[in-house]
Amino acid sequence: MAPEKVSIIIPVYNVEPYLAQCLDSVVNQDYDNLEIIAINDGSTDASLEILETFRARHGNLIVRSTKNQGLSIARNTGLELATGEYILFVDSDDFLERQAVSTCVEIFRRQQVDMVSFALNVFFDGMDENLRENFRGERVPGLHGACIPARTFFSQSIRLSSYLMMACLYMYRRKEFEGLRFYPKIVHEDNLFTTKLLLEKEHAKVTCIPDKLYNRRVRPDSITTQKKQEKHINGYLIVARELLKLELPPGDCEAAAALNKFVQLNLLRALETCKLTYAGRLPLHVRGRLVMLFARTKIERRKVKRILFSVFPELLALRNSLRKSLRM
Image 1 (tube, rainbow, N blue to C red):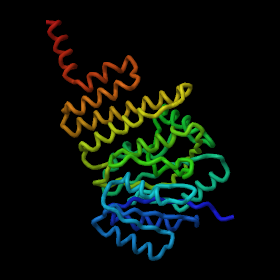
Image 2: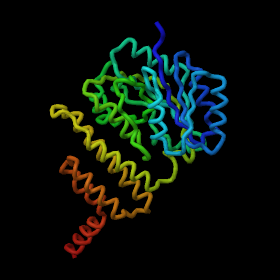
Image 3: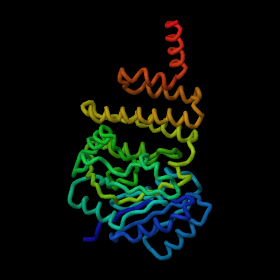
Image 4: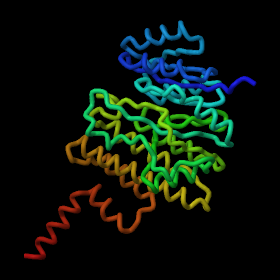
């Protein structure tokens, strides 16, 4: 029986210094039946030339060039082309361990699961390693296990503060999630995609393994390390808005509570990113969106005051001023 085909989707945009290492790691997997789909997202450097060189040597590499539309649309284009039984994403400045695909496929063969999740190794290329605490690569051991309901896995990940959102850390069955796509033209798109992957299908199951099968490069000028801008704020707010549309069964209280917490976490990150972007100021248009989205979540009584003062720091200053006046 022929081995199951795995589709590996690689979005490519101006990654000339790193692309060959990424492609080498994919074409040299110890698993043969691979469909490698590289989407050249309007690169202006030599990335396309590197892709064409690899395509000439490897018949299973498909290259498509599009105008620059961002990571989400590039991945979605790859999903439209994919024909494999399983999907795996790889970012073009990262690379896989040689046994990454075979390890996951073997788990799919042994267990009735819809996705396999694994860990990653984080390495720094031109960046200060003191930032390591901001880039987690491992989950707590309590999350490792075979054939766990995906919603339970999500809930436990949130409860243990060990949720890894990178879409590249999940290989999944393509036909089970046929309609799932990335939200176009935003950053933090993985926050939304991976959460929907885990929550949308009521009976989906996942196996989580501790193996570090993925190598993530932290480098200057990547989406995660570049100076914070309005697009980073907007990304968090859109993720929160879209996650609030998810409908979970009334009896799934644990998953609903975890989702509520994760939505609030994205809103708090939007708030902190806003302060970094605008030197401590909070523009009115951002405050309005934050208030409307926070109002749609369930906020614990003890957190209401803290959130209110974070969104409206003037209230905190007014309270402190009043307290000072009363003591005089």
